Length: 266
Length: 304
Image 1 (cartoon, rainbow over the protein chains, first blue to last red):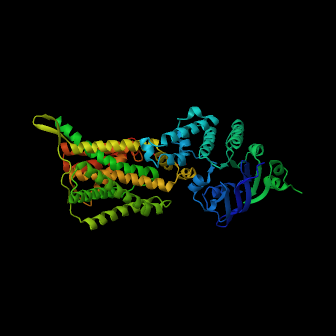
Image 2 (image 1 turned 135 degrees about the vertical axis):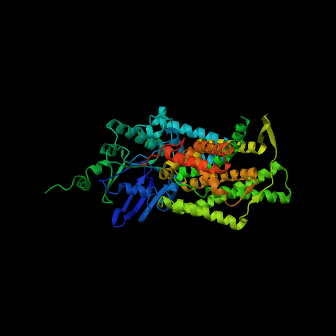
């Protein structure tokens, strides 16, 4: 596999009062890899994401993102900077589209950084001058490409909130991809999907890894998805890493089996 | 008929001004869900800056009207925007994420502060400005009653229409407008897409203040008298306009402003100008009872 590291999580610790939600967690996610984070409910998976995307300031530890030959310390950056300058995008367990904006606009908002710059901080956009027209055209084209990839081209002008559940999930991923991320964090993207939709999701994620050459961090309970597409798996239990390895290694790991199924009676 | 027409013209000019102020209320409410009660004072500051700039221009002897108007416009918009930005920065931003009433109380405090501040600096007396743009033309004449449209009224309506058109384009089709609408729906998510939420909110305040400054400038020229207290009543009426149109809705604010202006003009024309404010605020009460979401507003939906 590709050996270039993308994200170094180094002794990440998140404490809420007396509760240790994440306990000295270290792992590395590689470029162009799908890294899954799995574990029983309450293991601290979403907390890791919240630290990564600036929701929480970690109690201790470092989050180093490799970008253009330098390392950005995500634990010290504001959320919007992590997204804009770091290139970390994320989706949520409970979908958070902008329901009152159209499908197309949801994808245009995600390209805020590029379009804002091209519009000369709004004035150019207001009068339709300067490089803005071209940039907006390119933005719409990019959004159209993504709508094609997720099969929503005919729904472009509908309000995002009116889409069926599975389509909203795919749109949320497309929106995250429109920010041009280096690292895409997906929080249970297969939750609530039927088997067919979940298979489509697998295809979409594999295609993103192949075509867009970015790293994906994946929290997921659906083992078909996890085992089917992950390159590496990190297993958490009570905030601690109990195993790390390829899907085959994880499947055979006794500590993992114990955490999921409990100890066999003697 | 001609009397009716004259009231219509007066009402449109007045309504245009209310509409410009109302946009500031509705935009801020849309994006952070608070009523910026200091907005009327921002408008009052716009009027004062205009007056002072006019007087200074008179002193240095710039009498070419288009040039004078441009300079006053730039000065009023510039200073007033700065006030709008500062008020947000020191009175509202530190309270973001606090309980809902906190910024509202802060806004009322800011409003009182700004009134007293201008009163101290400029005195409590009414200030006057000699007419800058005079004249107009007669539209028609029936039974000795002349229907007049002044150039100033034309300018007020023209400027307002132009600003509102530009504003509508900005909200619908520029990245800033999209970011504002995104922040309105889900600030956290907007930040995760790389949008600087704090700056977007600041910009909203600046734009609201700039529009209020234009309104203040036009009122100064229209009536020729201002004092430190004009922001209160105008602000309340513009707020009524925003509620009437549906707070949070931009076309609503424009429509509401227009309706309030017309109601005021017709009430003064046909009943009694002493009770025009009663009529306007009576409307506010009726709207709140009969149609709380306003004419063009969407009913409030709980965010999940």
